[in-house]
Length: 489
Image (cartoon, rainbow, N blue to C red; front, side, top):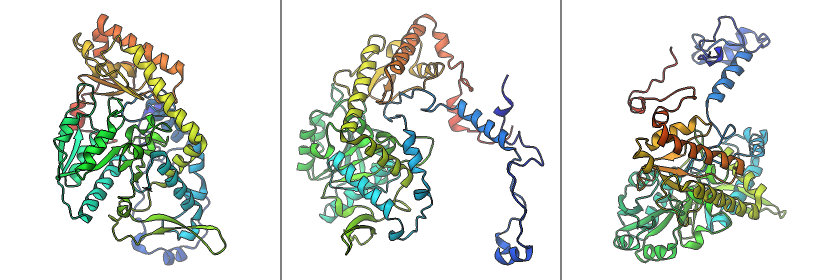
């Protein structure tokens, strides 16, 4: 029997109920009328539920139990690193010393925040082998778009107007979207038989019309591009720029740096690599690192550090940058998430960041080897922090990858990414991250093996899943085309 707190909060409302007690207003009405213009006053009370505090808490706790999140269970979402968020980062980011700062505060009033952001930029430069960083972009796709605007400005400064950006067929979906938004023509090249960049196909597009080559490394199959230096040479010889989608940077921390590989620009998914809140439509953070040739085109403002007359450091936001592409964010960035990332990096240090990647790679290899005999593994040699299985064998038994993903939910684990990358049929993209224990990984392995058995012995059970979630199998096509977002019964 469902709990009464599963109801909509408006259904829990009762006239006359108050959630908080406030003292009576002791300011005379005449003074209030003078202080607040009449056109700023409500003409009627807002349509809000009248619910006591215990009911409010129970309602939202009930909702949180229904939702799957990292504090509740394993979330092996390949392509989007979903690691545990340390609570110390949350505590520090919520300090009133940061949260009470107004975005329009003068530089001298927020020296601590500016110093933190300046140091974070320097740490990101060191981690990625870049020369400068902007923290403005609000997420990875925003970082991609910002980078392409800078690349266009760079070419125009050299009196060039190349029109094409090349991407591999395994690219994240935001890559071609960003290319189109920046006004470039999208050229997609197929991967080779190993799942990596086909050098001959790339070389055929390396001419005067090449603006950039966008590449994820490791790529979306979890494979490191072992010929990255040859790729960089081909692109640079043609006058193009080499862009790295940093979605999979969690595999490289302390091991390899994009700047040393020949990349001119890389975006950081702070909400993937550096353990800040991720998903749900909330604020991300997509810092962007560049080599010196792109540094003049960074968005304004940038944070500069100077010495004052007393020998101390002072920080200020610099706007006078004639080659800048301009602002890409209303203020300097999503500061709360940047603070969380700063805390994460400082807490781990250089050795700790290296251990992050090493453990993530080991965890993924462990899952891969335990599952490869029951699911097809099209590209298995040399995968790093993530790998892609194929449910083609199960499909031949009448069970689709979508069914497998739904069935995983019945075991209290979130489904991995399915049907991506597109070059793998019936794809299951799995990334365990470094924050999962061996017990957690073993539990996931057993779940996957159980489902493989069910697909053979009782396929209807899998096809009709999920069975234990608050909402069962939905009509996903109808939900996308005809969404019902009303709170009314």
